[in-house]
Every structure is written in C-alpha cells, then in structure tokens.
Image (tube, rainbow, N blue to C red; front, side, top):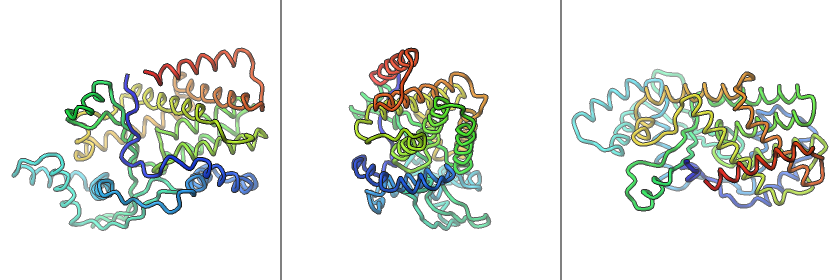
Length: 357
C-alpha cells in the first residue's frame, strides 16, 4: 500500500500557530454568524482569517520560485501543441535531459508571453497571476497542488539516493478550477438546505470537507485549517459550538485519512492514475498527456460530487459525519445511539489500521 510521503512542492505556510489561528477565528466568528455568505465566498474568508497569524507571506525559496515561473510560462497554454512542436524540433538537434528540455521549453514560450505575477497565498484560489500570450485573450493561470506518495520500495530508493524519478504523486486540477470549486460549494449548499436533520447536515458538511481537502484543494496551502474552521462555524450555527479548539489532532488525522482514501478510491475507480515514473516528465512537457489528464481529473471530481455517485463514494461522507458527531459527543454536545457508536469504533479501527500501513 502507498502512504503519503510529503505534502509536495508548494507547501508555503508553516504548520504552527494553531492557537493564534483559532484566536483569530474566535474574534471574527460573530461577524460570520451575523452575515451568512455564500460558501464560495465564506471559505476564502475563513482561509484569510486562519492564515492571518502568519502575516504577509512571500515565496522566497529560489527552487520554488524557479519552478513556479517555469509552470507559469509553459503549462496549460492554448498554443501548447505548436510550442511543443517547436521544442521537439529544437531537441532533435541535441541530446537534452529533462531539466534542459524544460529550460528550452520555457525559453520558447517566453518569446511571446507577458506575465503579471499575482500569487494568492491567503484568502483566494491558488492563482499564479495573469498571462497574455500574443494573439490570445489574457487568462488567469492556476497553480497545481502536488501531493506525493511512495511505496516502501520507493522510500528505500529515495533514502539510498537511487530513485530515478520523483515519488508517486497526485497532480491537482488547474484547468477549470474556479468552475469546479463553484460547483462543489453550490452542491454542498443544496444538500445542506435539503437535509432534514442533524445527521444529514453533518453528512453534507463531510461531503464538502472531504471533497475539498485533496481532490479540489482550492487554496495553495492551509486548506485543512480553513475547512476545520468551516466545520466549527457549522457547529456554531447548529447551536453546538465547541467550548474550545484544543485536542482536535486525532479528529483532524482521521478526517485526513478519509480524504486521502476518497482521493485514491476516486482516482482508481475512474482510471485517473497517480503519476509515477516518466509520467512526471510527460505531464510537464507533453500537452496532449496533460490535457487528457486534466480533462479526466475534472470528470472524476464532478462524478464524486454527483448526486448519483456510487454508494462506495457516499460511504466517505457518511463516515466523516459520524466522526463529526463523535467529536460533538466527546464534548458533551450530542448523544449517539449504540449502533452509531459501534460504527464509529469500526471506522476508527479501519482508519488507524490504514494509517499504520
């Protein structure tokens, strides 16, 4: 079984200052409760609040900046097929490795491309800025999130320095991200409004959180922090406000395991692969491969959000709802039936077993 290896290249915000994030949330909470905003606006606002303790964060690491600019110039271009042909002809005259090919590709694309860098690290979708390619309308360019996994064999090879390719990874959606994010929020709102009781409303909340966490991953970083704040805000609106935000680590880990399971199950069922081996190179250079991957990934995410999604997909939302209700029970805010407690115990056992593996 593959296990998570690292959160990927674009982890920008530190993981600390949780107490400060919750203090900022508590201060802003009355405003959120007084004015209910559409979810597509509320989530970025929560993200801005929860990341505010970090101040104005800038990307200064040269390796990350170089990779960002490389992607900004080259990925998801409307003229990608023509540019790739130019690269193919230039590469045929020399034996270039992957890094050299990427530099050549950037140089080819730079010639007729103007960029306006406007990186959104707090309170907005993962945006690089705008790009104007001569002869085409100006476009907003989204950066892809990257989550890496590896098998035990890959991990040993990495530690030994013999791993030829990067670890197995999930490359997140870039093309169509705003539309998919809007659809996710609207689907959540409809399901929440139609819910007849607390259990169904918690299931709608779990659907939002688990689908957003890794499949959509709307923000550059700190997605989990913003989604956890949304859960806390939903509890408040249900009259079940948490007395404090300490001791949430196990709940967060269990929900993260569910979101990881949902991601891997959805990709497997719809035959969108995790990227491994030479495909790491193809998804950065070959426009046909990248276009097909992004089209299939978007279809996969939309299938997960469909009301007629498979029962196996819906199981994840049901499990997430049970974990939320169990958290409320531990805080003395709700009661759970014996069958519910039995289901929670079985789910927790499955999750913890998966984490160990």
